Length: 84
Image 1 (cartoon, helix red, strand yellow):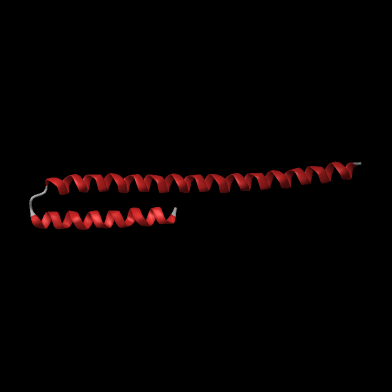
Image 2 (image 1 turned 30 degrees about the vertical axis):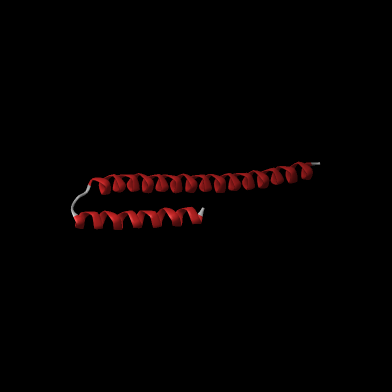
């Protein structure tokens, strides 16, 4: 009878360890999702600022720099969207 109790206890411990490992993986995925979302929001905010600056810029060199920045941000956003 004692052996039955011991094996059940070991089995329960193994199941609990598996549950903890699964929860840790799920939490890590959620953290990665949150980080990706924050990065995407940051890129979108930067894009908005660059577009606003581009609309009001009159210096051709500055406009060129802003346009390159906008192109870069658009590429980054597109690559993030493709990866999702």
